[in-house]
Image (cartoon, rainbow, N blue to C red; front, side, top):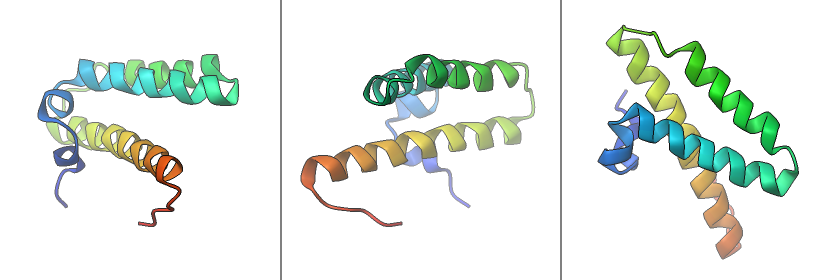
Length: 89
């Protein structure tokens, strides 16, 4: 299965720190709309902290793909809201 990170800019997908920051930004954005910012931010932080000592490249790639998938899904969702279209996968 090809990496989902190809859908993200390379400077974001190749760098775990930038991916983490973007996940935090999205969590804050969604949380501000749904009034649960603290919960979402702590969930993102918890997931990254839990896996910060992982050394297996395959596991790291899978985790990055999962984070990228979440970001892509949110971008598609927001695009759909802006255009009034619904996207299905």
